Length: 602
Image (cartoon, rainbow, N blue to C red):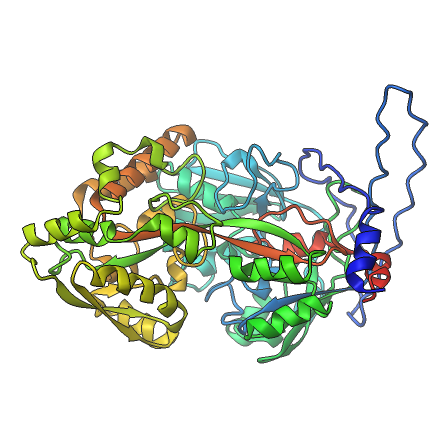
């Protein structure tokens, strides 16, 4: 019997997923005993099988019993490139999210998806729950006071040796990141991205109280302190004191659910269960996390190799899948599960202070030369509408197309004859030649753009660089036209709205050389957003800023995309939320249905 037929027979017997009720932070667990040195991970006692439900009355629907998580097994996840930064001071959102933790996290286990589906990065301050902190007080948004959870221990690895994590550790971690004390004077380059420019002090009146003060009220700065962004990570002072930094895989010591056990560059990374982890399942408070014994990251640069590994059950999960590969999986491996993730639109950056792009008529002409509906139907396989979009991807924060004035809509409508007329009015009746600096990953898409622009007499030349050389060249302000870098978020994910806005101001160091935008209206809107202390009014200001960006046409925008998280049916406990900054939280709550995996022949 084939695996596909076996799956079809089994699928009719599979229980429906448990509907997750809204809940607050888990109760503080009892202080654990000092952890023992890590060898092979040991699984905790499996939770008892729940008692059989009472026989329903004739009017009650018969509901399947909820699935009960099982401990043990290995979860295998594909990455396409090695970790680039191990120390949060130098970067994050990689494997180090498995062991470094933050004071709080997005409450994706408790907030209903109709309120926030957590498929993007933005959350209101009321949509966070405690992690290292059990509670906090916002006060007047000048002073933020955290109550640190008692009984959290660092992983039992020298030189930290499993001692208790306290507020003093968080003071040290923030001072290091901000350059505010403990011998640190130079802030991390990532501090500007999270709007921490108003933080003036971080103190601990006692070992379980953390106090962060701003020079003036700051909603955005306060919100990002609650975010599970890697800059909020707690790091142990003993390790930094011994090695100088943590930017080596052998120096990884956190408080999180997994302990880094082995790393082979270009091949794999293995993290094992932290037996002393304080976290418990929010839905089953008696269950200590994590459920799996180990997480293995396999470095597989080639997509076809990764896809074959998924089809043969050697991988449990591949992420960031574009529609072509998703369709291929649907045809060849219909048993695989998928979660769709909305992405920002790819944008083409032009330096708006240099001709010919200093004339809005030229930028508008290039936009009007693109048939977005056809692009969506062909290049993106009809998975997304060809509706023009702005800079912000988040529902409630973006200026949706239906709200655009007709004059603005006309500047994004496919109209090659109108584009030629605008070019002539701008002094380019015969068109012009220009060069776009990019990386190899964008060449296929840019070939389509090149063809469209050739029809209005614009000759697009590619300057293809490898990623390191690209970043250096663009960062030095040498590229008159360029595609987004990975850091810009527009090509690869969805930045929270305020950092996304910063790319259209002088506030972000990379965005200014890419776009050279200097606009007093935009700068004023950005400042107003930063000063806003009312979340609903702030959302309105962000929509206003997005609409202004759209009307100025500082970039040439393509369509918003969708990517997919693809995972095996035996991977349980996933809620279809974005993995960005959440891999430790999500992977610690996953469990492997070993019986189903075996029954499917793997």
